[in-house]
Length: 172
Image 1: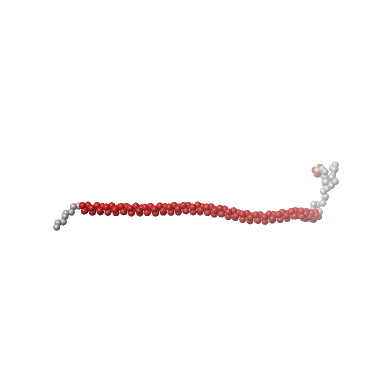
Image 2: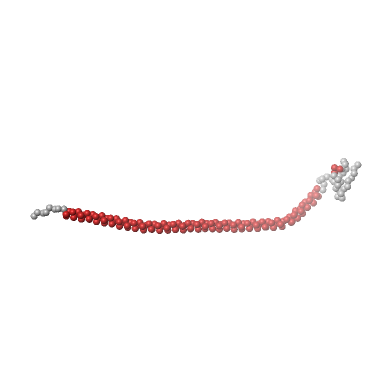
């Protein structure tokens, strides 16, 4: 009592297998064991895999080689850029050290001007002290002279008083 369903031209079922009745063979499936024809399929599969791999490689290999070459060029360019960058960094460090040196020279100039001013002040103070010493020496000499004159005046007065003092006359 089976009613065969419509089948497609390649022999596959158009209805689901659960619609088959018991004992009815499934169309499109062989009664052979699954190991039969495996070796033939493997040889065909190996050749197909090999051909597919060759075609895949031949299709992508030139692009990969170009990419590899481009990457090598980029790597070389990066090395050159890194070297250039290091040189520029060293130049900037030199410039920075030159700025430091310029700052030191400016500071040295500032302190040199201070030293010159201090030296001028010291010379001026030395001149003033020399003048004051001369003046002090003159004043001291003047005082000594005045004291000497006073002393001489006292002596003269003393001599005069001595002469004015009555003396007994000599008897002859």
